[in-house]
Length: 433
Ligand SMILES: C[S@@+](CC[C@H](N)C(=O)[O-])C[C@H]1O[C@@H](n2cnc3c(N)ncnc32)[C@H](O)[C@@H]1O
Image (tube, rainbow, N blue to C red; front, top):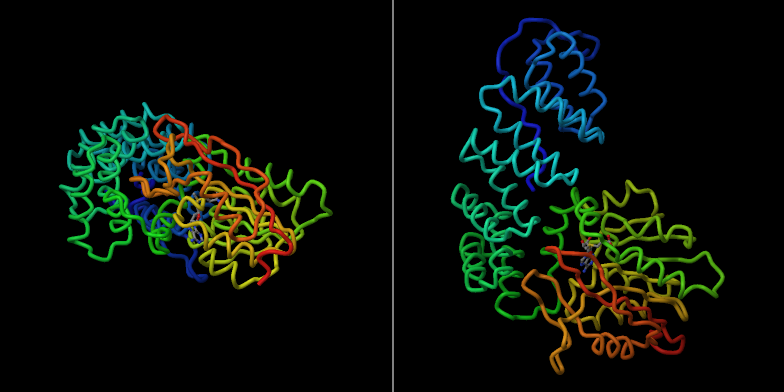
């Protein structure tokens, strides 16, 4: 979804009334429209308190100021008050000649609060008001995908690409939708066109490789960074809606594996993302470290205040830099961005102390596993692994496998995503480097 926008629009009309945010002791007299524009600037910079105070002051002077109602509605949504957000944005809709932006943002509010049918109506209203509304078409394409209406998602994403041929999000959506429909040739054509415009695009390269059945050893750092920097803001909400289980499963397995040992422990969360595992691991940890390639995901993890330290780094490189440093290394829903697991297992053996514990999840290679196929890069861009391969890689890196359990990691497109929950212990004598 294109995020909720807070456009600093040209003022609708000049007001002439005074409203003055103090500026260095010198009171500036602003028109109401200027005050709304100024508040909108503060709003986009994240200063919600100051922005809200100005919006409310403007509405005290002119209760039907349409932009002010609209922006305050967005702000109330950010504060978690969706009822107030809806009332304010609807009030704005009634007061403007073309409410395309308001309908689009109300749709976004509904998506984020899980009211997908209401969101659909809003995006459609937005497009009635502005048939070439790029954001509304893109949001509609994303929403159709969530609703499992894949052909509709293709049609909407095609509209976005027609309107803006360089729209990467829509190309990704389109390629994904063609893959879901089994139209691999169409997906390949989308990625090839994308590469023709942007030959170095790590996303287009990775997804094209997936469609062509090629097998890079892992997703490139650039692919991971671009993907998760863009996903960070909506990650927690989206994963919650997908009944995401990996953090809970990993934490439970770790508690079981550490059961007998005296804590607290030095724990590394490898690919910590927004830090969903953090609060679950915190009670076990003397020192809890997170490492991730995405700066935006790490910013979210920092806000959770569960980690002692967070590092922006590639996880294998990071593990090699900290030999014999951790009692446990966990990795939830991250090694699906690795095909070859040997480098991770070897690096974890380096970073673990003595008989340290490694717990992680991977996605399951579709059953029945083809003879001898260790892993695949699926068209959605993540890898799936066979359990025999996982066991073999762990043994080769000096681990004894203590658990290899079939689990459901989350749902996607309405169907469960099957995976393996893996617990392994470093053999104290093996893997010492
Ligand atoms: C699906 S998210 C899971 C995040 C978190 N573990 C959770 O369960 O919520 C995968 C994370 O792994 C990170 N990641 C993927 N490959 C990585 C690598 N090679 N090194 C470091 N981080 C990586 C991504 O940036 C992303 O934040």
